[in-house]
Image (cartoon, rainbow, N blue to C red; front, side, top):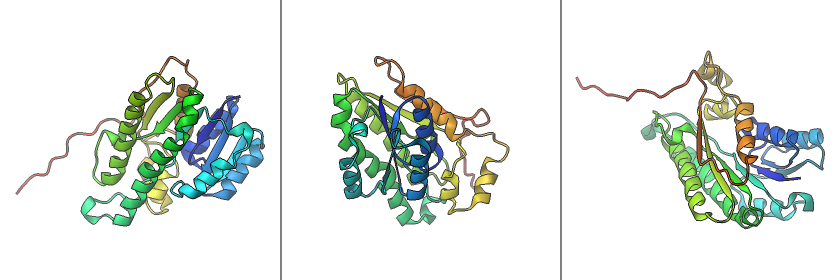
Length: 249
């Protein structure tokens, strides 16, 4: 039985990934800050299939302690799903809160890179897979996307760089880049405003966490000689925006 390590497993895409992998016969190590949500998953799936690691991804000491305490059955990681991440605010750069910028960088970039580095030896030994959750914001800028888009561009480029560095090891690396996915992501981005999130997705028929989870599982279970480098996924009702033009006078 293979084991997936999924960050941000307490909601949205991460929780959906945990459910999809377990349904497909995998063990899952799920991380997150919300202990009660992790415990609910552990209670639902049982200690043989789901192991909870409660810590903030930015806390490297807590992460290392959690990794050191993994039960033997969960210690060999076959697939790392780097899902944990967030956007804070959607204001123009000149009006943004620098603390929000730093939180996004620490979470979406520093924590992701540090965990990947930590798990690389085992992933190489097991010829495993690394799946990064980037975003269409890595490619298509929009007003208010500034640092969030920059962090996701890092994730995409980091995945491509790893793909190059890991050539010959058998490790597969994929950047999955979703468009509009209705999860708690937009609620968090808007400071907990559920109405703002509902308005944003109204009438769009957006992707769901389950849609992306099925994509992640598909990538992870492809034959060992097949690598998906990047995969951009949007709901049908979302497409590319036109150029922004500011007119004088």
